Length: 165
Image (tube, rainbow, N blue to C red; front, side, top):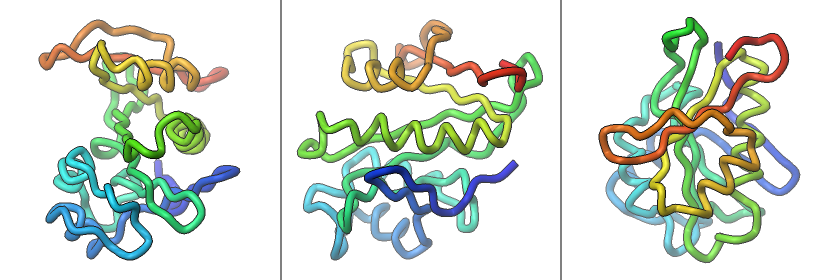
């Protein structure tokens, strides 16, 4: 089970971070070609999960030539209770990029790859984060699993067809 290092959609490219980029994000340093508000605190937190060469690691969300946020998984897939490989996804954009469908487009592009790999995806979201909940619903996250230890809603997206889930 692997993902390509670069995933693309109609308007976006989603490359896995390089080790140098991950170090800059972890330190809160911006780079040429990154939006002035990127990295955000959530991106810095995600940098703690970065492992060189891991296709399940965080990725930039790039529109044109500008990195606007990040998306990625909290580690490689692990078998869920039903035996289906599953990963948790997280994503976020700088405030200026909200409302243009970029999060939905980026997530749908990654989901096409996880579907091909036979991996189910879940997400945890603050119950008050209505825009993120809308993104998840638009992307087919229909299974509500209750709340996690932080009080976040846990939602999962069943695999399409006969792939399980």
